[in-house]
Image (cartoon, rainbow, N blue to C red):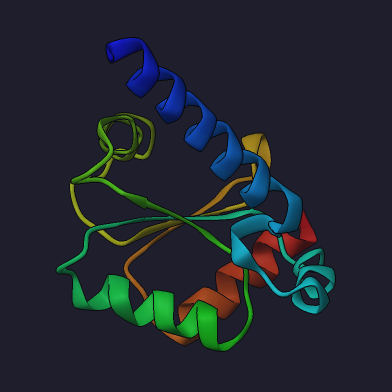
Length: 124
């Protein structure tokens, strides 16, 4: 009986994974919007669910079709480690624009400050 249940679970898992992979777009993004996404540097947002500024920037980025990666520091210990050690912060939101030596770090959020940091990250 256990072998039958195990086989059924494996089959279901394989079916779900292959079905999801066939029609998936990165982060569920609209293909037309992914073309526009190439105009932006990588944007990583360190956030928590209950933070009003975190919600504000998520809404801003989504409304303006700006792709981003959200890392919830309460749910992801690696994200919390990056936030506190790599970016020397204990508060959120922290937005990282770009990668490697070209990273531009933004702590807090206003649309004006984000646009200023985005320009700086795009010029690098």
